[in-house]
Image (tube, rainbow, N blue to C red; front, side, top):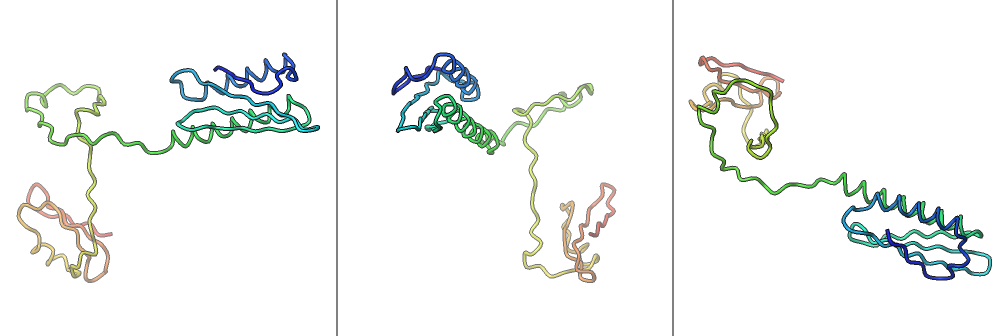
Length: 189
């Protein structure tokens, strides 16, 4: 990290300045790793109050930490602490936000029977080749009247595998499944 000083640098003793620069170097490791960062340090004083202002450009905007105290080294450490809090907050915000990959093309070719007849082995994660699983939400309030299990059997079409309906007697949600052998399973909630 390149550090540029503005103000009276001779007031900043060399040993505390080295510690200050080490803290800024540690801070630069938490920032983006692309390219070299530059910190601009402004040293000012008004009567008995020393002020240190640190400006670093990262995460697409400027981050500023300001510290003021009677002692220049404590003002510098206050400024670094405030800057570090901001960097941690922005870094966590960037890391925790949801970022979506571009939508994958869903028209992927189906696997051939020769490929599906392979020997079972350890499961591998292939996010690029496997289509994502989709969850379909059922609208329970789509204007249909509650029905009995017998009415649900009559309502179910031949190619339909399941039917969700509201039971007329209990008012609860029920799911009617068609089994492979032609019989039905009823799940009541």
